[in-house]
Length: 162
Image (tube, rainbow, N blue to C red; front, side, top):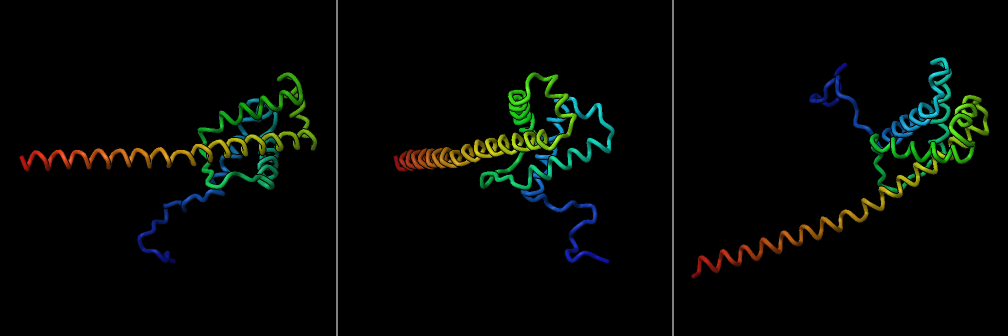
């Protein structure tokens, strides 16, 4: 069966939506946090995959991000650091945090999910504020360029006339 668009290739992946990008961001972030807390190394693949999937689904369930937030995977390292720091404050030193996270207790999972949501929201707000201020800078740059171009045109006209 042929696709409706003859120019579309069977090998082309569909364009990622913002929801897909957010899900990927949360998944990578969750795996970074679990890796940083050394919980993936001591579990069987089936266990950590199921646990990661559970944490990602629960994190996304009630996650609200700032409008226009475009998650970037390079930012997961920064957000991971904030999440791990937050979890250390809640559960104590790193060795205790590692032990507690291995329990997969609902209250521990809830704390992880809450921390992920909090820091993702903070990150999205931070990026939204940066994005909101960026167009003003470009507007000023464009005005300066057009003003300079106007002056250069006037100088060129004066040279031609003289």
